[in-house]
Image (cartoon, rainbow, N blue to C red):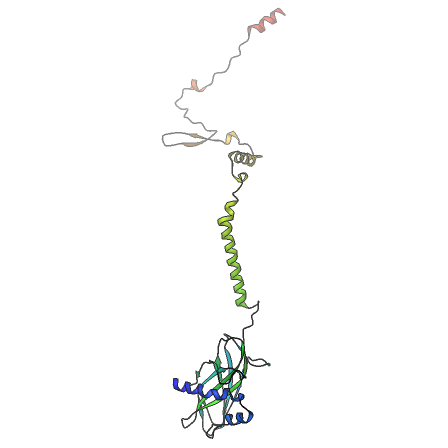
Length: 280
C-alpha cells in the first residue's frame, strides 16, 4: 500500500505542472494514453464561493467528485488523494510540492458500465495564507484488475484564515470566561490587601450604652405589667415551684386562728388637743 501511494503521488507531478509548459506541450502531456479508461470526472466544492475555491485553515474542505463510467465493464474506486503545489512562476523551475493531502480508501465502491457515481473527498490542512495549485486524483481498478490514475482536479486555490466574528459562540464564551477570571482576581486582591488598609470605624462597634438605649427604646409604649398577673417562685426540696401571685405560699390549716387575724390599729387621742379644747 505504501508503494502504491508513492507511485500515486509521483504520477501527480506532471498533472500539477502541465500548465507551466507551452500549449502544445500541455496537449501532449495531458493526452490520455492508448489504454486509458473512458471515464469522466467532474469535481465541485459545495462550500466554495463564486470567486474561486478557498481552503480554510483547520476547517475540513469537502470536494464532490462525479465519476461517469463509459466503459463496457464496471470499474471500482480504490482511493482518492491529492496534494498542494507551488503555482508556476519564473522563480520556480522544478515541481515543488508543499503538502500531501489525506488519502482516503473507497473499498467496495463500484460504478457499473454506463453509470455515474458521486463520492465525497474531505481533507484539512494548516498553511500560511497563499495561492497554491490543488491537484486531486482518483485511482480506479478496471474489470481486468488493472490500476489507473485519473486526474480529478488541477486548479489554483487560495489558502485563507478563518474569519472570526464577535458573535461566534466560541468567542463569546472566551470573553465571558476572561471577564469572570478578571472579576475573581480583583475580588481576591481587594479582600487580601486593600480591605486591610481600611479597618472598620469605632462608630460601627457595639457599646453597652448603646445597647441599653436600644433596649429602652424598644420597650417604649408597652403596656405595664399587672401585679396580679405576676408569677412567684417558691423554693422547696423538689426544686422551685411556680405559683400565681394571688395564691398563698403556705398552708394555713395548722396556724392558730388568733395569729391569722391581724390586730386592728387603735386610735390614740393626743393630750395637747384636749387641753386646747378646754381652754377655748
